[in-house]
Each structure stands twice: as C-alpha cells, then as structure tokens.
Length: 169
Ligand code: MN
Image 1 (cartoon, rainbow, N blue to C red):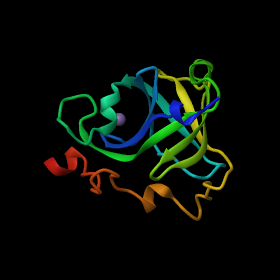
Image 2 (cartoon, protein in one colour):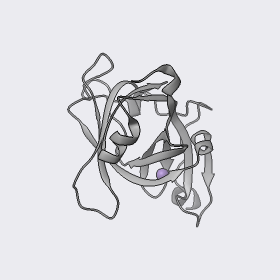
Image 3 (cartoon, rainbow, N blue to C red):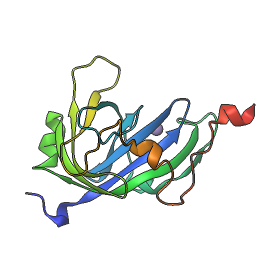
Image 4 (cartoon, protein in one colour):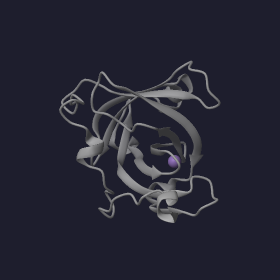
C-alpha cells in the first residue's frame, strides 16, 4: 500500500550530451535508479518512449545542474527539468525486480500515473519503455508536447546551454 510516507524522490534531468536526452531518476533503496530517455517523456498514452537503463546515481545528484567538463563521462550541460516525488503502486522492490513499475508522479511538470517496464529488446543496456497511463493528466501529443511547452529548469528557470561542440566552434 502506498502512503504519503512512502513517497520517494523523483527527477528528470535534461542533458545536453553528445545526444540530447532526458535522465529519469527514481529513488529506490537509498539510490537513484536511472534511465536515459532519448526522446523524453510524453503525456500521450499512445506514445511509448524508450528508456535505457543507466547506472544508479547518488540521491544528492537529483539536484545537480551545471556543465560536465569536456572529456568526462556525459560531458555537456545538465538542468533539472522536473522534480518532485514518485509513489509506487505496490512493493517497488518487487516491481523493479520484475521490470514492471507502475507509479504516480508528483512533479512540477509531470503528474498522474505512469508505467515503466522492461522489454526484451536487444542492446548492451536494459531497454525499458515509459508510457503515460490514461488519466486526467494525459494529453494527446498532437495537441500538447510538454517538452516544448516547458523546456527550462524547474530550479533556475534557465534553458539548457548549447552542446560544447557548438560553443567550441
Ligand atoms: Mn545523461
């Protein structure tokens, strides 16, 4: 059973690395489980977005904004695109182990119910899919794209800085 006390940290960082992507992070077991979403989240229940599992991050990283230096892993700018809490449906450890997470987001941009599930798609990392559930927070992508409507940081309000390769030119 989910109670407010079980609410866990959630954030999405917009990351202007070599390829722009959105890093979804969900607190579980004292760490941030993490997925890189190349196309970012969509509020449209008919749209499934690939979410490639990436290494866990420390809880404190959820607040990180700034530039990762050239030559370092993930070099490029990072902003906190959304943050808040997530409420898993049922036991999140079991659901995570089974690759079938259902949860409610209480973010500034993303709310309502979501589903994140592991696929059998081949790849060097686990391939999951993120899908919005049908509820009051769902919107057709043809009418509303949350990525374009709300592109900036929820902490500083700033936009993502251009990729390093463009600046260095
Ligand atoms: Mn990243």
